[in-house]
Every structure is written in C-alpha cells, then in structure tokens.
Length: 152
Image (tube, rainbow, N blue to C red):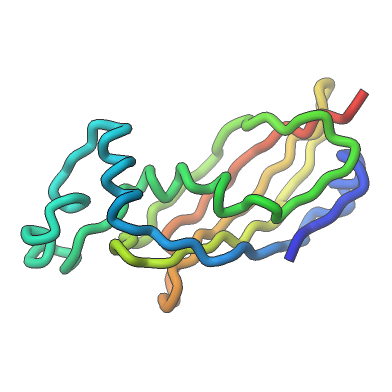
C-alpha cells in the first residue's frame, strides 16, 4: 500500500493517511555487520551461546540497527510527485519498546502526522511504528521529519 500525492503541496491534504510496508528479515549476518560498522560488539547481539541463557533467550538486534532500517522499511510507502528531493530533517521522538530477536521479521506502518510549509519546501512529520511479526507490541515507534523540496 502506498500513499500517493501529486505534489509536495498536496501533502497538506494527506495528513492522517497511512501505509504499511513489507515484512523484512533481521538475520544474524545483518546484526553482525551493524556491530562491525558501529563497534558495538555487546554479547547480547553476537554471542548466541551466552545470549541463550541471557535475559532475551537469544541474540537481539541493536536498537539503533532497527532505527537505521527506517529508510528500508518505509521505501515505497509515500510517493510525492513534483519533488526534487527529500532530505532527512531529523527525529522528534524515538522509543525502543521491545527487543528484536535474531530471525524476526519487521515491517513499518507510517502515518502522515503533520505538514508544515517552509521557505525550502514542506516539513513532513511521519509517525512510524515498526511492527514485530507475531507480537502485539511494536519494536519501535518514531516521529521522523523529512523536508520535501518541490521540483523547480
């Protein structure tokens, strides 16, 4: 499902619209690659034997790995015509609500929460929930902001 808007100006009328992405596997190789990229080699992420008797019963993804996957998890959920580029403007709120065990599948559900015109384009606030397949509680919720710059 994709939210389709003809132009950045049209985002104002799209507030409240939602879209859900495809399920995405979090495997051991991705967790290890993230550990290497960030120098975060904590045992709860990498040591399967120790993690089996730890608080989660298995290794878990880094919270920041889950957060860093937002672009991948939300790809294709919002299509805005007449846009030159979209710039990451920041985050207002992020909460890690539960661990993501290795082998889990995640997907994003995003909602256009607010649109604020600015001199450079339209600041779009998105409320994104990262769902953990088979769980009633999400893994993560985030308020992200993107700057949608109209084509010239």
